[in-house]
Image (cartoon, rainbow, N blue to C red):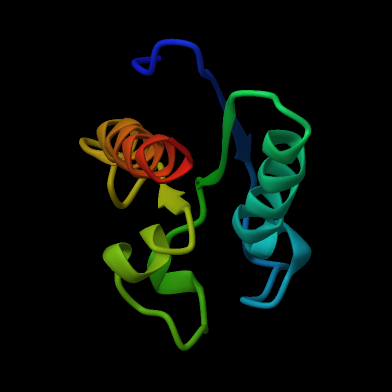
Length: 107
């Protein structure tokens, strides 16, 4: 997207969360993908990997300990309805911010 020489790859999965929990592999994939990214970078590839879930599930319908849009965003879960005006902007801002930090650290 904006780092010369680096391939930016963001996996975005539309997914309902009614039958998921905070320890779900889908929810935790934003961490797993960073482990994959490290292995790929150690192999000499210049790539930055991100993953997000965008969900149509209403925040009020989830009975998790996490209760705000910002706290879900920290887990790379974005709400298509509750945050309709901003979830795509948030996705790009998070991707670009993380991307810039990782490229600086790798250099």
